[in-house]
Length: 340
Image 1 (spheres, rainbow, N blue to C red):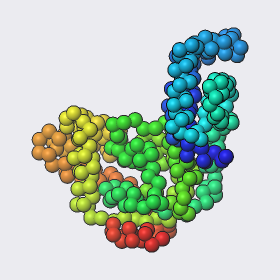
Image 2 (image 1 turned 45 degrees about the horizontal axis):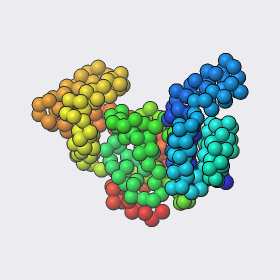
Image 3 (image 1 turned 45 degrees about the vertical axis):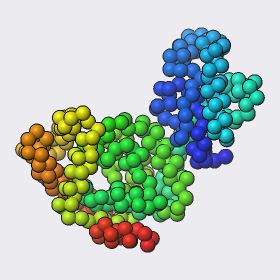
Image 4 (image 1 turned 90 degrees about the vertical axis):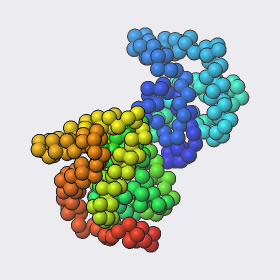
């Protein structure tokens, strides 16, 4: 079976919790044969006394009732997810032992040959050069607050990079929940692309970095040389969109407005050098005043858009003029994409 199909099953990742969080096959569930603490102990034994001693310790740590509990968890999952695989890091000892234990319980299941390591190598290989991307790419661009994400998600051809990254893409786009690891971000976007049923994909114009995760270099290069559809709306509507998403909706995830203000002031501080001292002071003062007194968030939002985001994006857009295939309002861009 091709690696790209493995994510269609809710496979069992047998590795420790820490390994699982660093990266796994999309859709997998973590039911470790050795927990973090157990895996650490076995690892130390392996380094000091070798594989035989480490394996012996592993059997001592996971035996009797504990062993039965783990086997039962695997069996319950396999019963609910027929066709799934089990895997460890290299497809070696941990998955072999789990396979043997399950076989004694008359449970037939396949091991993923090569394990996560081979899967990860396959993912990396898919981004070795831009010509590996055989689909037609359509990139939806536009100034911050234009409604690009909303437009994108009207179409089945869409791959929502910001959703996968769990970040809204801007300096202020951090969400309450954590972003995925870099490996998991790459694993998911590659899986989405390889299993995409359409001949073309629609994606939003993004910077190379989305929060703390980074697009593969060749993926970003492909975006920069793909057809660009530019969404244009008036500034007042853009400010309204930002106000709704970044203040009115965002505040629901915080105990009070001061917590959100604190986060935004921290974000503003990270771009202080780009803004310059005077502009930074002006925007931070407007922001503090809006949160604490007059609630006039439009002032700091507008100032941030017009003096920071817009010049930066317009410059980047000027470098890609030859790739622009359509410019228009929401309805116009929707109709253009729908007709492709």
